[in-house]
Length: 128
Image (cartoon, rainbow, N blue to C red; front, side, top):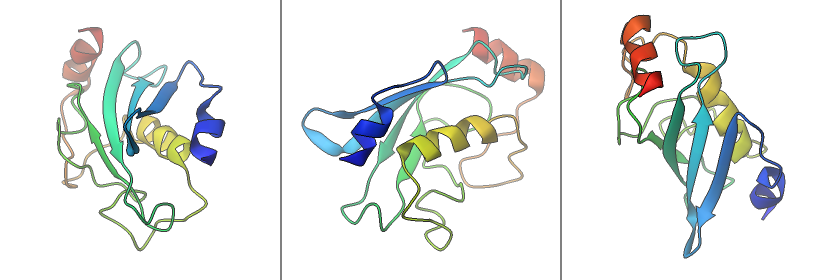
């Protein structure tokens, strides 16, 4: 699977791997983006790949309190199952992880699974 090969050399920003007994469920950890209220935080989440992946997008959820995304709720991003019309089959789990990191310091603006905690509240969560 190209995903495993691409993620074999994880960076300090993220790590991901599938469950041993289910290649469609991946668990990941991302670090909060530097120079943001999330800096220093580590955030755990799940990516559920549909059987049609990579032709259809994954579902993504965060499992660590972070002040940006609801815990355990599928989040709405342009590369998630909420927006199959914008999904590109060339995108990968690495692309999804980088997008999560990039979206963390942005406003939730009422999107599904979005939260708009204050920067101070987010920084407190990053230190927990």
